[in-house]
Image 1: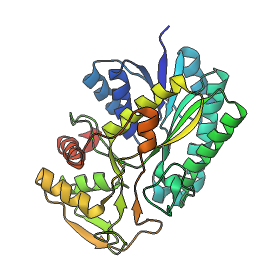
Image 2: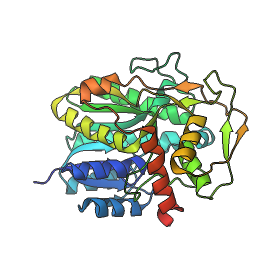
Image 3: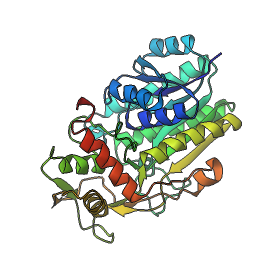
Length: 339
């Protein structure tokens, strides 16, 4: 019988790149997505790039009956759980929506998984669970605290999954704490396509470069960093996708729960990213300095050695790869998947 890996939110930015990585590695993939912040076109392009079929099902993770139908129909061996709302600013305005979708949705998913005795789960967590970390680089053992409902929802899910493993030790769970995913597949066929105004730096830079937006706002140039702008750990989405493959392979052999940072261990400032994008791609990115945003922190980058030790994974893509692949995607698809 064919075994499948279920990707919740499989059509999203990280989900679609992971789908491509997994089908190329020989996995059968099912995507379950409500397309609230993604496009079915992404998975059509994954099929074109891989020459493999992906089963795509439209559904919401809060819908227990819809999930039950999927698990009833297919022999699922593991779940990679991407589905979730992810805009920090929006989460402060719509906290109940975020807790309902992210937290309640995950509880529903786990209930259905348990019913079908599927107990391997890779969870898409976030470095936001560290809040304003007291020291960098950030280790997995660093204190956790979140500064907004989005981060809080990720932290709550981590705590729920830890409690689940305490109660039922036969689960195998990886909490993958992403730092700042950027870039796109080198084909330029799939990439980041946010709804409306981008929340993240790199798609905003690329939309300015392609002429969709007038200029970039750099929020704060008075942080205690080398150039005064915020420093983050940017990780190429293709490296990140490979981290999910390695986590799935790890869960085949190990029970329990592990939190694992996925980052490069190197911090780049906002202006580093702007300048690298302009220089590498020979394109102007006009920007202005604006006031700091509430809740933003000065510096955040990973201590990623646990991923190397446990998963045999480390990043391979350079800063130039990140900005070049971002621009290839954006210039070929100026309006994202609507192009």
